[in-house]
Image 1 (cartoon, rainbow, N blue to C red):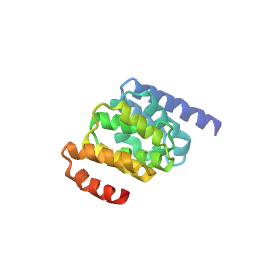
Image 2: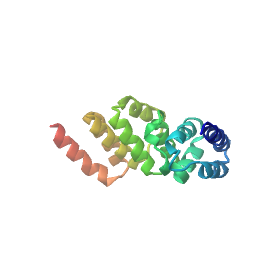
Image 3: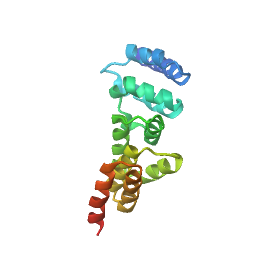
Image 4: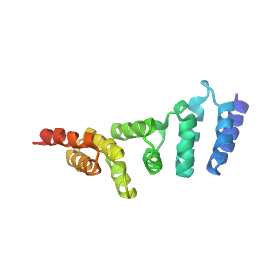
Length: 169
């Protein structure tokens, strides 16, 4: 059992290094060969390490390939998942999962950091962030982000502003 665990860790370390160095395909193949339903919880750290250490393009590629088998909500750097997908301009269920986990953990500070770190946030992401702020209870920030999304031409955001405004007043 201990030998199996050591082999798993060794394989996952190799996979992580492959992904971080840009060979996502080979890293994912290694993970696919060694991770199964009986050791997935023991292996979850590898996805968190990839999220922390890999370039955003590799994070996105890895999550799109094998992210569903892992519990990314257990990772400490969920903000980076959102950041990487925003940067790639790809709306994803991983963004939704990360935002939901940040809301559940009441991590408004992480949402604030996202806003300061991203220069240009696409309108659909502004709506997602607005929704997250709304769920945390920051109606002012919710309305501000919806207004920005509306100004960028997203009609859904324009309708949502009126709903938020009516809740505030």
